[in-house]
Image (cartoon, rainbow, N blue to C red; front, side, top):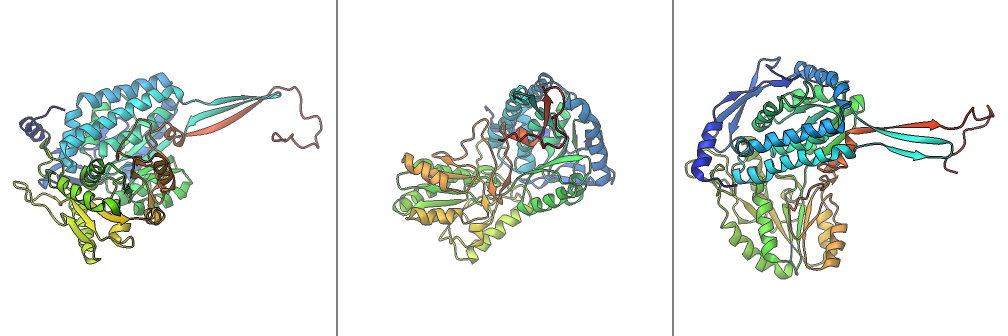
Length: 511
């Protein structure tokens, strides 16, 4: 990305004009039933950015019925048709990539550099990946002496998709791309605090899809979520968000006994061994602390450093943090922006104070940050705690901000016991030059993903998802399509007549 500050500022000014968005239902933008709207703001300036509809059960019912009516035709579309649609969507994203990045910067507070290179680039890649997968989603045939068994793989139906505010457009892609590839229709519920880019994206692709295939209802989660997930015409729910909300989603899904895929919180461990590349490992810790202001479920927010290299590692770490430029998120040189909302800002600061009260020591940061010209913005200093015990609140709970805990270890077994002593199991990192150790420790970590010697080393088709209370199901991979389809087995008998004996049991296929 070649973007200077002047050009960035001009684009930000252009996209800051306040707009009002409706729900997107059956191919049209419509006002909400309640007539009420929700204000979206820019967390770096606290200025109004947009207004969205405050949806309710009436809006949800309209959207689900539109998706239900569109499902028969879309579910019978060919792989070539679906591939063409997904490629077209990727092209629309690429055509306005910088503008979409700026929308997320203005609405979320993330830096323009991150939004462009990670979020929007990733969203484009997801639609392209699943476009290629459309032809590979098919059934199977098994031949027997007396029969042919056909296993059809069929789209599951209308899907409810609920996405968070931290990487809004990328989360929309993670959910929409596999659902469309599988032949499902969707009702998408974006976060009520950050969703400008998602709504603009839907505007851009409205003519690509048949009416009703994608529908969007905005509003507060506690008002929209229950009628959406409990609707009798919804056949599956996909949710990314907090553990507490997931518990409610699971209860709602139980009403009609529909499957769920849940990608929830994390408290990922980043393990630094005594033979690690300390420069690369220290850089990784800085990145996992500041990337998207720490508002990342995969953040390596617990760092376990071997005692032999702790002093050297801490020195490298503090030197790197001193170089982090925090400030205006629209400035391409900025590396740490503003927290996404006042609620999140207050939450992160409360955890920082909790850590101090529990006896942890502040190595770096430790409070709000004041940015010249943006004094009203929601900025927090990147914070590193030392002298952390594993039973502290800051060591056990997901903070979702630029806060990282530093532990020291000597014994591998004891260290792994602490690493795994957490309700979450989403991501993890490991730094060592020893191949045997890399395999041994990564296998012992109770987590869904481990990166060795480079954190956030995402690859196309990498399964993303966790274990324990980080949820279940996998995203961004071919396996995801299994969550959006059902199998139907059909056995064609090739022998004439019946069994030959009315009283004889059917033959046992497994003998």
